[in-house]
Amino acid sequence: MGTSTTDKSSYILLIGTNEGQTRQMEFDLQEAGYHPVVASSAKAGLALATDSTPALVIVDRLLGGESGLSLCQTLRSQGLKAPIVLLMAKDSLDDRVACLECGADDYFLKPYRTDAFLKMVQLYLQSTPGDTDSLRFGDLVLDLENRHALRGDRLIELTMKEFELLKYLMEHPREVLPREQILENVWGYDFVGESNVIEVYVRYLRLKIDGEDDKRLIQTVRGVGYVLRES
Image (cartoon, rainbow, N blue to C red; front, side):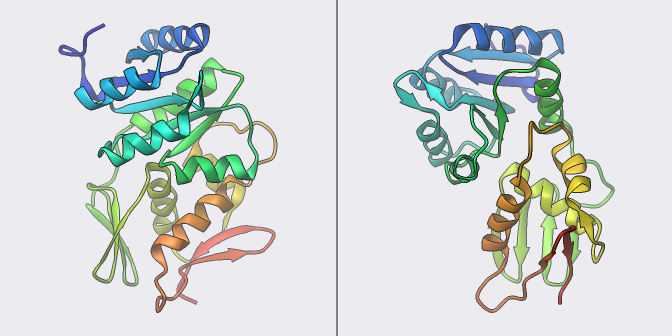
């Protein structure tokens, strides 16, 4: 399948060795109006990602004898800016941390579920609404067009999901946001079982946003959720 005549905003690269699963995903994406391309190995996926400009990359963590985590790291090291979603079988804290540390934006839990998967894809490929190019809170500025943040003179690179989480918090400054409300508005699709995914992303946002001399802006409201405030 070529990509020369496709809309780049709907071009999705699927990298997986489970032929049945990837073919089902490819079919579902085509039916939904997207333009999926399948790579059956890490090497093939890396070549396709390098030669083209996917809008979204889906990587199975289990790639035969290869690691989807390592592939994500390689894709990021070679300058891929598109969001990456890992297909994972487990939802432990270690798995979520590994997902973020390898450069992936998010994960999707197996077994594969068509409706939930397409909701996630739609979330990542929808355009960013708004009448302004940036959001500001104190000395923190979120650039909506380039999807990065500035705190003082420090540039902060963000993954897609970190950007969406910070954007939602900055759209509701000083408002205590329950965890369930954040999940619904930032992730936009159902999680299987209990998940402390928000805590993981908040931890990484704090590491990026809060310098040694900066005030912590994302505050935990124990038993409820989070709030963006200066004290």
